[in-house]
Image 1 (cartoon, rainbow, N blue to C red):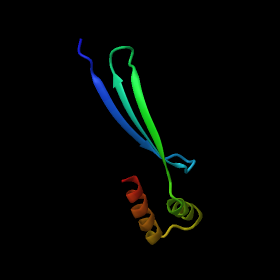
Image 2 (cartoon, rainbow, N blue to C red):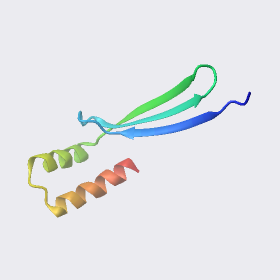
Image 3 (cartoon, helix red, strand yellow):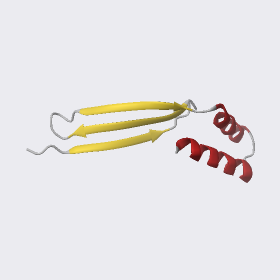
Image 4 (cartoon, rainbow, N blue to C red):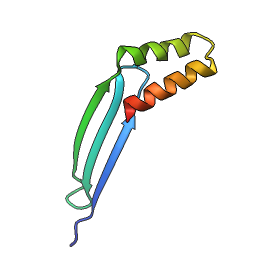
Length: 77
């Protein structure tokens, strides 16, 4: 019987604002669906946290939104 292998990557950021969580899962369809997981949390920098809190506590301006979008995108990349 051929063994099918699936590779899955997941990414999320929860409401705790501690950082971005990444997981890599490797699973096989035989042997009762055994799965190997590898996970890591990347902490937000103080700069990113300050931008997130500014966006929560103030009327978000277009400029602040764009600044946050660029910084967050660079962080995630």
